[in-house]
Amino acid sequence: MKKWKKCLAMVLTGAMMVSAVGCGASKSSDGTTGGAVTEEKTDSATPDTKLLIAAAASLEYSMKEKLIPMFEEENPGVTVEGTYDSSGKLQTQIEEGLEADLFFSAAKTQMDALSEEGYIDTDSEKDVLENKLVLIVPADSELDITKFEDVEKGTTIALGDPASVPVGQYSQEALTNLGIWDNIQDKVSLGTNVTEVLNWVAEGSADVGIVYATDAATTDKVKVIAEAPEGSLAEDVVYPAAVLDKSANKEVAQKFMDFLCSDEAAAVFKEYGFTPIAK
Image (cartoon, rainbow, N blue to C red; front, side):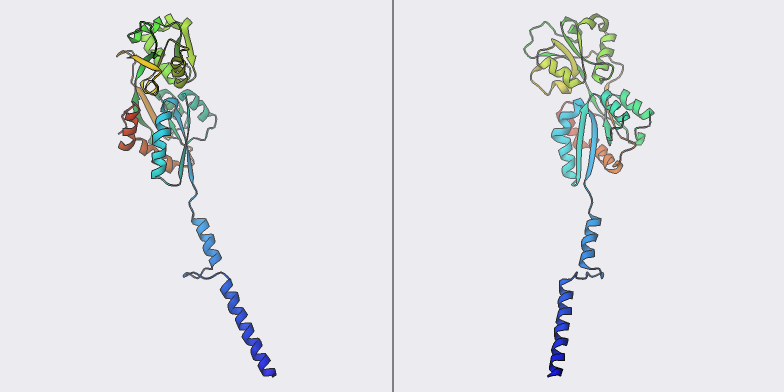
């Protein structure tokens, strides 16, 4: 009887040991336990990458509606966010610590300034687009305005602020070279970015305004009268882009930069009225 009880105890002990092994972490082919495998998967998972693009206000529609969704679809795990304003304001924000990964300016002035201050990865910088400077009026305007120089006929003239807005700087240059700038100062309202200038004219708050051709094409509430005359600007309206030197995601930011210079992106920019020039 004692032998039988002893045998039964040994059987039960063995069964418990087998059960313990079965309920515990199983071993993988490399000898690690199930718990270790779970930890290994967690460690090897790639976290999502977020890019912040500081881009000129005139790029907002093309970026938000087409380009960013296209890039995100082609690059799972990457999220691209944009902050859009005048290039001068974006320059100031970057100088004050904005943690952007890429700067897409509407003029070379702001890009050159940031480059000289050490904020730009100069190897990544490229001229990506060209735009046109145009005179616009409200769609229902009845003023006798037929050419760019007729800007003087407006009683309220909407322009970008030359102190910080590239379209304002281009406007001042063109109007100065045409001998008009000094004559209109008492009629000028200065906008903080090109979108604000466009909206003033679209709403009828201004009789005339000067914006980029791409911005004028975004609404049927304005009509384009004329482009800035040849010779009124020393250089074309060029949009440069570059990766920020202190970007925490340089590799992915460069990938987005390469995408902006691709044939695929060029086709989108053309849809929005830009002229792609990146090579």
